[in-house]
Length: 156
Image 1 (tube, helix red, strand yellow):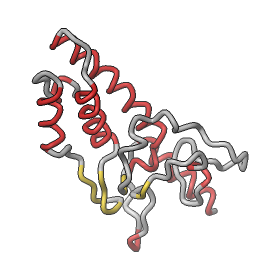
Image 2 (image 1 turned 90 degrees about the horizontal axis):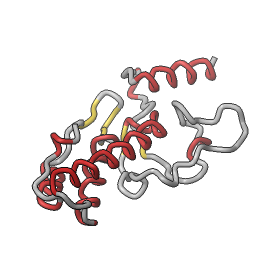
Image 3 (image 1 turned 45 degrees about the vertical axis):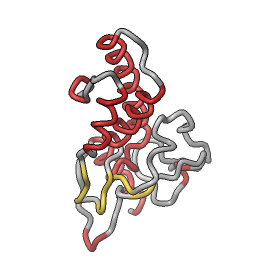
Image 4 (image 1 turned 120 degrees about the horizontal axis):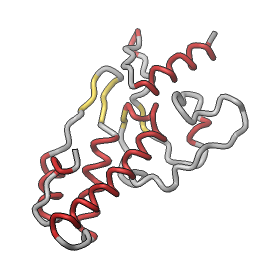
């Protein structure tokens, strides 16, 4: 029965369906373990979590948000998807900066973009039913300042 509940919660998480746990339990609002064994956590839910006992996790070493997300986020349950989308958005943002400024994005621009993109794809949460979906104004202003006056609506 416990395995069936885990599978059902994993399906909900993969679909982005909010589950409000009873009794204050938390399914997805957790701090991500960026280790190679992230999928082996007993509380791991969602795509990539190891239920087969193989002991092998999909790699997250190349996730651009790996060194930026050290807080609780509901995207713990959709880690692989959030990492992929973050990378795709960074590639798109770099192209947009080059298109609008006529030059490749400098390092300080890339750093600002990664900060904003990771904030967007890994929003801070208090509980499974309370998260903060907005990017801080300071992150938006840093993108504008460091990326040649290009603003985040270009990337949305």
